Image (cartoon, rainbow, N blue to C red; front, side):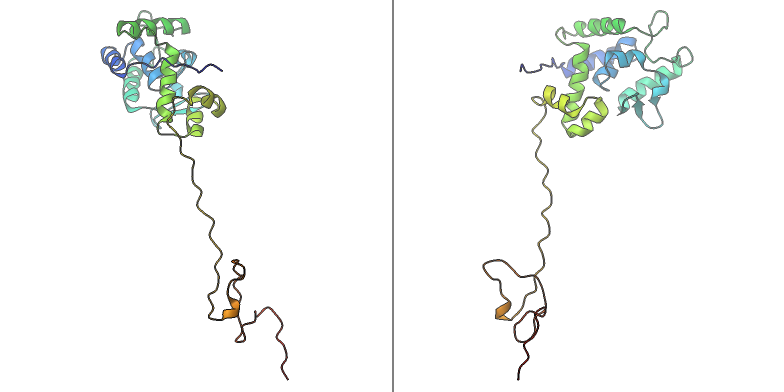
Length: 213
């Protein structure tokens, strides 16, 4: 099977784009894809009801994504300016109507090309976000916030994820054995006996005692 290739963007170039377009439609689209891991359709369908400023998260139909502080600040400015215009987050700068998916792709393509990121697709930004999440989260945690099942994540991104060390379960506690000064209560064949009190004759208390004349 051919290895899945992600055209990862240059971080410095992405920072330049976001600084130049702090709250423009292009900047919001790239922030939501690269810093929050949203797909093109999710960006197009995102509404203010799905943005929880109180809980600092995006509440999508299939998952919840922690909201980055930088993105939260950007969205809060947009909310104050445009929330009464439309319930949708990403609007056209010309007529304040929700952007269609194809318009979102076009704006992202233009912004990326201006910084020389000609091979990076909008989808690559989401995938780069997934790879960065794998740096400090395990597969199930990334599956929860990305909406991608663990087997699909591993099939696509195992080559990009840092080597995960297997978790070591704590060793089961060893049974406690009673130390006895009685030589007959010592281990036999290397296997310890269970802790039972001994009588003074060195026999196990669980055994019946011999009656002496």
